[in-house]
Length: 443
Image (cartoon, rainbow, N blue to C red; front, side):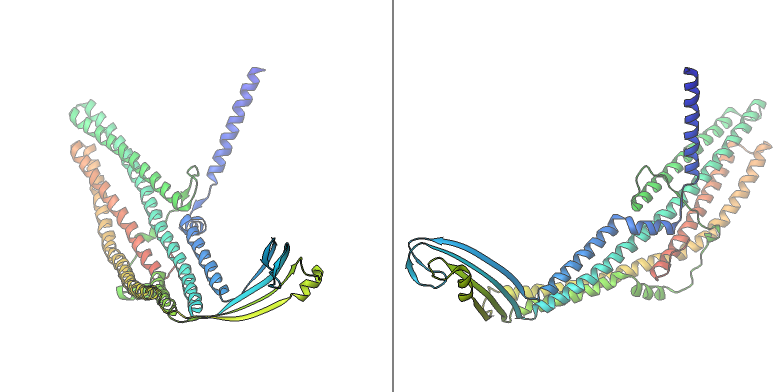
């Protein structure tokens, strides 16, 4: 019986393992478009920007409602004894009085230096600004994803280069061992081959670690749990070289029209101008309209409770005018502060324009440079590969030392890495320029 239980357990384990392999093999491969779509829905920075926009919507609704009349109901119950004033008839009496008062009060601001209207307009600007700020945060997420995605692909291809070099080194160690046994090379040459293989083994480990680090960064921006495994889609091999066509100023002008940062700055100036209008409104008088309905009951009146509420029913309507004369220079200080804020907002707009120009200019220059680097790196890689193949054949024939073979392999490895880096930088800066112009990112 015990034997059958062990066999059943092994079958169950194998089935579970096979099921896990099946699940992993059918796991989703993430494209850049998948990452962008998922991040824009789940990234915490974007969610925070959405909540800020919702707060601005509430503030806008609140200021619009401030122009409406308010309405309050009130009720009170009082007991007094001895010399007192009847709260209903206002007669002077010496008695115990039980009184009840109910009422409805309402007021509306008719004029307040146009401050309410300006606050509504200002909060509408803040709402528009928060909508644009949400777009700014989304754009930042898209750019970060593009950079991390390409870095991840770069590190993934670096693993292949490192593994190929390791395999070549292992073969060279075997050849060196055979030549050592044959007495055609010295022990130092053999140990040099072993050292190179160990160094390449280290490079494989380092490349895999770099890849996993970028995967962690990618999962962070996607807000995925650490335990979830993801695999990303490789780009088209034909995207190794992307040529740049439009001129820099054309791209810059398109970026100014597309990127929301400049519109955020423009709205910031308008919002501060409204702040100045609101501050100036405090110099003007405030006119309010008030009204109330009320009634009451007193225990010393001969009428019944219900009759008194009919008899004592009252209505009031009034206007209130408040004229500011001197408020310790508070209004003057507020207008001065608002004026300074306008100047600061204009400076912020200039700074934003400079930042956009710097981003576009840097990406443009790097795109031009990476185009030339791809061409040069590709030629260097081809030459280094041919040289390395020739060195391998020469080494096999005994006409090359192990040190010279190692140098040739390292030269080829560096050429591969340089080409790989130039290729992905070229793709990165081209896609950045496309994005700055309002075009979709496509890999």
